[in-house]
Image 1 (cartoon, rainbow, N blue to C red):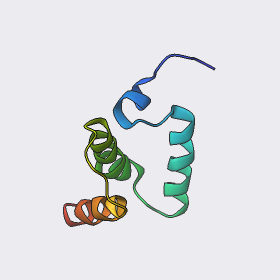
Image 2: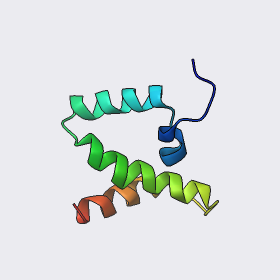
Image 3: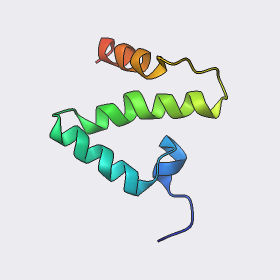
Length: 70
């Protein structure tokens, strides 16, 4: 396994191997993976990188906002 940071990790905070699993789950549930990746995962990663306070329902809010803007 490559020990360096890949672009997937740099943009989303998720390893490439884990992103493959997320894609499979999206496919299984008929969720557009590209939309999910850019609207949910990237936003969540940006919040975490800024060390902003995260509430328990942060993911729910991210999903609701992403759906409104879809």
